[in-house]
Image 1 (cartoon, rainbow, N blue to C red):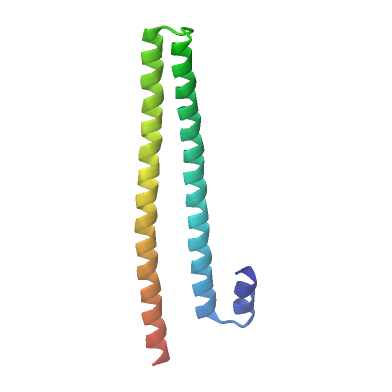
Image 2: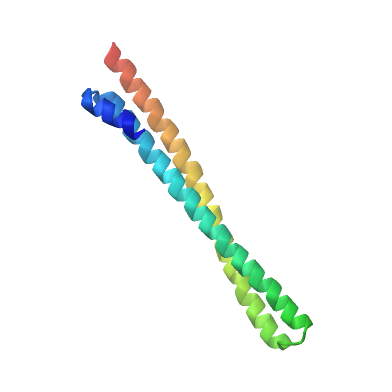
Length: 116
């Protein structure tokens, strides 16, 4: 894509350069979004592992029932928060996808108008 952008710039093809530049931006945002979702999933796995260790501690009687309940509630709150963040990120990605589709349609109409 970088090579195509450089070629379009060298040929002074503004339309191709704009299209490639927009696609590069979209791709960059998608990669960033996927990295964020991956980070959230790793953090959620950490809390699930922590919850599992807490359950084992209760079974081995190394933690009191009251402490267990307090810590469990805190961990579940963190997991719920991460799930909400993932949900919002997925919804934002869906909205972004549809907005990009609209932008592509508008660009196609602009191109068609220029060709006439």
